[in-house]
Image 1 (spheres, rainbow, N blue to C red):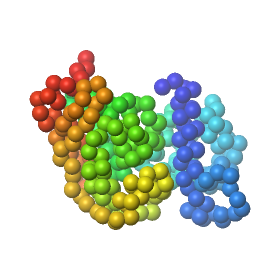
Image 2 (image 1 turned 120 degrees about the horizontal axis):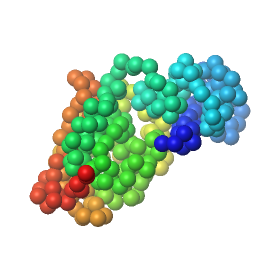
Image 3 (image 1 turned 135 degrees about the vertical axis):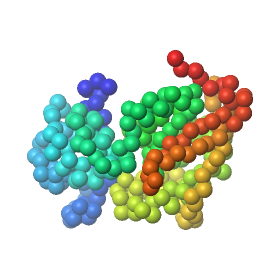
Length: 272
């Protein structure tokens, strides 16, 4: 990633996180009519204890450097979760302080393991269905996940709002209610977190299917063990799923896709 692209990504990421926080969530009055959702730039600057001009330049992608202390303050103000916190530091080009949390399991050793499992598709997600990492086979299976912006790399969001993604899931109408029920069950421990509430709000607005299923209030911990995929180049694929939780009480799970038949096994790509 070039420096210019990295700054642009940082600017977009900060705007997206700022716009999901409402004034009342941070103890500010709602005030008059707002042209954009969420907090204003000057409000973020005030709460984080940084200059308005400086923060504006940061959100505009200008060539400025942010200290770890400033990034920590911005992260707290925007109520970033550990995954988003890591992403902020990465885009800002700052060394991230050690965070003692299970969200820090995506190590170089794990990336090597995902590569070694190719050509089997493998993905690692958190309880909110965010894709934390994946290998090249998964990228091939789902159609260039690499091209999705960071904040869009959520499997539930893509299944419900991305027609190209959904076209690869012939049984999506059968399977998604179970996924949504599992998502609702997981959200019970995250009810006040902006990242979860923002995702639910967006899904309710953009997906009538999600709205209908969500209003049924079903919860479930049952996992899907077999799933079909329709790849535009090789046709139908069938996989058995295996789930590996990365810690005794971790919400991070690695899912491996093992071919359910010889036909599927013969269609998987080989990477050098």
